[in-house]
Length: 86
Image (cartoon, rainbow, N blue to C red; front, side, top):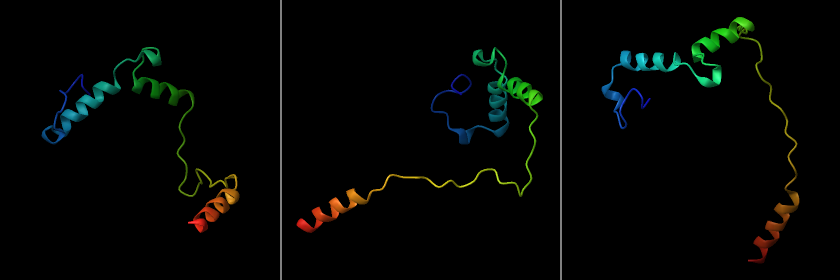
């Protein structure tokens, strides 16, 4: 953002069209990491190779996993004993 706006710029004073213009310029800037493609070009390339399919509302995107945490029983008993000594 500093390439387009000065430091300590108050974003309340900037109109939305100007912010969108800066956003568009940043997203269309060629990037070395993408082989000098812009972020938008890279997104379109990846989407063409493996098209994004929207999921239905009822499809579960992730499931809750049970974690096997190490027991704190011994540590808790130790601190309970210390508390009784005071």
